[in-house]
Length: 229
Image (tube, rainbow, N blue to C red; front, side, top):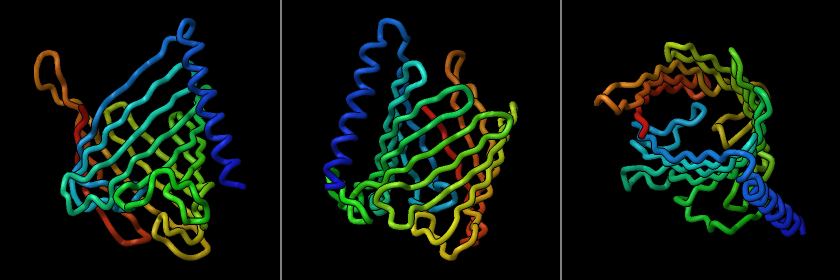
């Protein structure tokens, strides 16, 4: 019963979003973005998700404050394909605040895409998040469907005009999602990053980035580099 209600409201919500884009196409300019990142390793919020390089394509459509998109990560090495990921998200931004709903799906786990069961038995995990963009950025996220631990995540970040950025994330309580246990707060990562554009030709520059990521809870560190197309 709950699954049917969830599916019904999901379809209605997606239909509403699609209708919004169609009906506002004449009055509000739509923006389309398509790109791909190549990274030496897929480390997400301090958790090592793919042991090796990965390609990460992304596509989004925006109109007004609404955005709909899809993002994926595919390991370049076949041995790491079990960590492949394909997500969908919907967001609405008003001023510096953004509300986002993300559907996480991992095809490499052999989970059936249309399995929307709850309580850790389905193929999808839904996350609700609130973000704030300012001189200091803030993020609060919670898994609200198909995560029996309802994992929480909070992040604070800062980025300079020169391309240097700092970020730190924490979670609370036991969470397989973030590979932590216990009742208190756990720092999942402290990250220092730098990004810049490298001029290749007169008309083309390649955005490159580097990150040093330390997970104090798991006592792990990573150095990740990447570029965007």
